[in-house]
Length: 150
Image 1 (cartoon, rainbow, N blue to C red):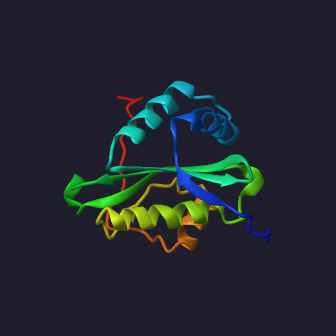
Image 2 (image 1 turned 30 degrees about the vertical axis):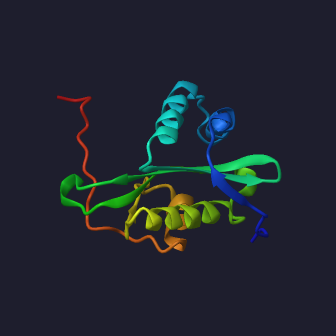
Image 3 (image 1 turned 45 degrees about the vertical axis):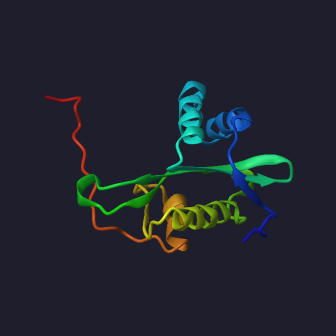
């Protein structure tokens, strides 16, 4: 297992946009600059949102976006991890764990006792990450309708 890297976690700032877009492009193979511009603007303005940057050395090597959600589908008010990304060169080195630890601290400070997220069931590395951080299956089941066929 790779050694943990020295990671500083701080709040995202508007100047992080290019790094977020670049990292997401590395992770997904698709550049979504307009999308991330909108997301970052919203997260910087909303006090119920958490935007975190993981910095390794001088570089932004990870990000996390979270928000407070309340009462959808009968759920109590909770934290929600909307997005997390870590550069492939520093995976399994504690970067994502550092982001999740700080997100948990900030969610507790906002008064919630539960944090939720959604993960593709075939994304084993991401599932493993969340499970290693004590996330377990919750009380809700995600359902979807394929609208391509009628």
